[in-house]
Amino acid sequence: MAPEPPLLSMSGITKSFPGVRALDGVDLDVQAGEVHCLLGQNGAGKSTLIKVLAGAHQPDTGTIRWRGEEVTLRSPIAAMRLGIATIYQELDLVEHMSVAENVHLGHEPTAAGFVVRGRAAREATAGLLKRLGHPEIDPARLVGELSAAQQQIVSMARALSHDVRLIVMDEPSAALDPDEVDNLFRIVGDLTADGVAVVYISHRLEEIRRIGDRVTVLKDGRAVAVGLPAKSTPTREVVSLMTGRNVEYVFPERPSSAPETAPVLTVEKLSRQGEFEPLDLQVRAGEIVGLAGLVGSGRSEILETVYGARRPDTGRVLVDGKPLKPGSVRAAVRAGVGLAPEERKAQALLMLESVTRNVSVSSMSRFSRAGWIDRGAELGAARAATRELSLRPDNPDVPVRTLSGGNQQKAVLARWLLRGCRVLLLDEPTRGVDVGARAELYAVVRRLADEGLAVLLVSSEVPEVLGLADRVLVLREGRVVHTAPARELDEHRVLDLVMEGSPAS
Image 1 (cartoon, one colour):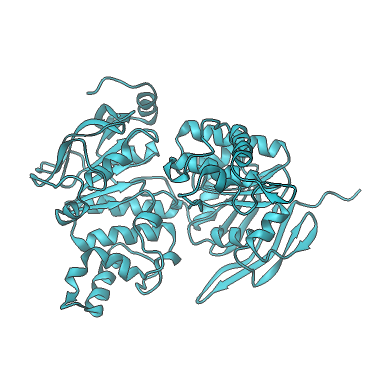
Image 2 (cartoon, rainbow, N blue to C red; image 1 turned 180 degrees about the horizontal axis):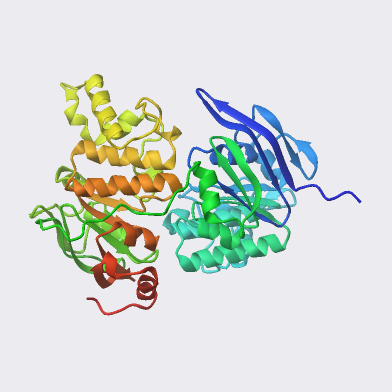
């Protein structure tokens, strides 16, 4: 008896865009009921490959077989009808619609040939949410009111609302705390036990070893390894395949002692009801202070309040001893405060604009005369800022959407470098950034601090906080439960603190 063909087989897939060969003869096969991990640095071709699989891009050459038969995926609808669902890292939900409406968008429940709205859709959605371990999410609630983790569950429910046989998950754990990651892995285990295949994309190699069955590695648009065993392939080998070199997970050397400088950023009794309790902190020139805590601990809300995007209930923020107007981003930026937000594509970048415009947008008064913009001066300043951060490609005219995640983050940092900011707020600075580019970003942040910036850092990855920060504030449920130099903490101690709490020190 002939062996069962793979559920999915992609052979010799190529795809080019103007000036770029994104995929160069890529092969991928996925078996029913397996977790097949797709790895590669940003720019390696992962996003293009999954868009081909999702029907969003048409390959230039190559074949796709589904259950042994050659198919053409002309659109996302065609892929979904076969049973292929894709959950992108940047969730494509409609915020002003309800959970149930999002889950059934485009294929509303019907009865007797008529679309059934309201109660039937909510009941069907409630069943899916219960299956995913989140019965507390109200199907009638607006998606825009949900947390990032809850929105991801809604996206998964939408995928399961179809007769899905293969789900692509792009960085699904990026916005999740450890408990949510455990729940995600439980869901994936249940799906694969039912014969559903999962293509899992993540930059967290420890997750790959924990959940994956096989691994395919892309580099420069080519598959440099296909179907490696996920649990037994050494991490060093995987990293070497991804980067073409051996990469150690090392952070830049931090100063041996705290900087003897005046505080640049001072926060006094800052609070927002229901988000975080009164907070005091200082960040000196040349210092990186990290905020460690679970999702929902108030980390991002603190940064956004310091930046003026949220108005505090109590307290104040001072830069160089001068208080800022509460709840005013304009006042914060004028005082030298810059924010690289967690959702850089949605909150920081003008995705259809050039790198130049993204870098210069906060400094336009420098290039504006009598209502006219000096394009030459704007381009020159942007080029200088991006070159200082080694942004690639070295072409500020390209749309920022074409850059890798690491280089998009560099564009955000270049904006504040050009602005001459004194305080840099970083929220999940390496989210969606590959292994090799992370080391570059760490070096950039450390160098900016060494040059005199005061940096306040938030990251859900405890090793990142401990490796990059000089001093760490540990948060639990909106309250600082411990403060210490980073070198005096380790990952287990921090996790114990965020899970159980401790008297503030």
